[in-house]
Length: 378
Ligand code: SF4
Ligand code: SF4
Image (cartoon, rainbow, N blue to C red; front, top):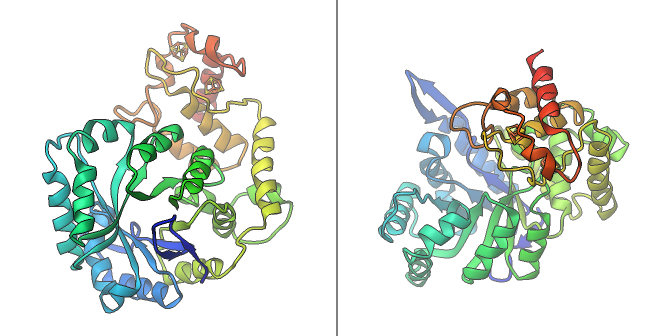
């Protein structure tokens, strides 16, 4: 297994990490539990094969992941790098939220310390309105001084430039965990900035939540050759980016553990040449689409709440990348009330054309929205 250093301050970690959010589960009368007869051997096999980074969170696997991970790694706790997360709700009003979460995680995992403690899924708003005013960075430093955690980090879901905003303010951060894959390279520049400034980068969603695991012609188009299975190639692409410390894979079976560990054994998961080629081809393929939306967001916000780039993205997945089932699943969220991805239904459009006036690609947005909606209605 190849290892990379988690930024300037962090430990050496395996370039493939175990994302413990999809451990095998059993449902009985609406109650979920982890199938530990399968999950524990998987986690231990990963360790045997050299994977030393295990990432869990309070909410994973119906809130059972932390317990199982704790039991699995107990015999070799001091040999692994354990990551878990501090959820910060909107209602947090004092630093007790940090201490309660930390104390509960230590109990659930049954460990005296956590190596990598993340503020879970934050954005600029969480940093400005919760972390900073409630003094949570000071609390994190105190937890480090007391030996309860070794590093403070954050997982991030926001505009890429806000990753830099947060890193510039929280100088005690060791690393950031963010989304990055062939279909979503929006964080690439911020990741390069973070790497150059001494932060580690852990990637979640390297196979795009399973989308890149779907059989498709995509990879042949990208590299012009038959080679690996699609998830392998997706992982190789992510690790081909030298700014990435570790790619988290949500492994579900022993076979997946073994396949992933094999990729992690390679010094060069993807050559610089193939990495470059895959990225360029991805953009090229997109340009040949009848609808070249770059996802720049200039057309937003729509007064009716339609998430225009999201709708067009569904079209791209279906017609450009050939990920038909996934695109249908994505589109089924459009118009779903309260879904921040889907936004309002396309039928809400009042043709005010505010959006089209702002689009640098000169897309006739209201007409295209109708066409996309019609193609998914078939
Ligand atoms: S034309 Fe339709 S999609 Fe565009 S801003 Fe107006 S309501 Fe929104
Ligand atoms: S402004 Fe145009 S290119 Fe940019 S996200 Fe909107 S539709 Fe796409």
